[in-house]
Length: 42
Image (cartoon, rainbow, N blue to C red; front, top):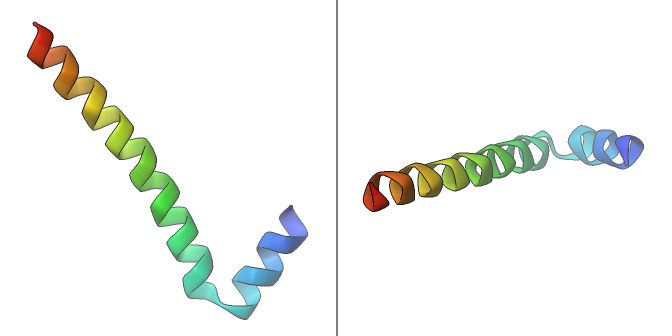
C-alpha cells in the first residue's frame, strides 16, 4: 500500500494531493452533516 502510494505520488504528485484532499473532504463533509443534523434536531 505504502509503496504503491509512493509510486503514484512520485509519478503524479497531483494525484497524491488529490487523494489527500478528497479524503479530508470526506471527513469534513461527514462532520458537517453530523453537525447540521444535530443542530436541526435540537
